[in-house]
Length: 116
Image (tube, rainbow, N blue to C red):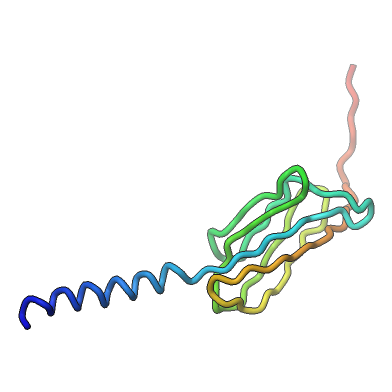
């Protein structure tokens, strides 16, 4: 009995650690321009208050890992477009969904200066 107790304790902590690290869900989708209906590249997509972040590729596609079993805010940001915060309900651990979004172009106050 004495030699099995350490093994039982080890297994207990192993199962706890697997459960804690497995609490993730996945979102994939595409970001497009709301006016021109074309893909937008280099959009930063991140979960507010976390280290989960990705960038859309040249086709506007992205795939991001998000926390499971808790609601979160997914933020889409790129220069030249209005930032969008999308409140997402909690997702089950291991689940995957598709989420496509369109960003609205933002008027710029920058002036263009041409030098010769």
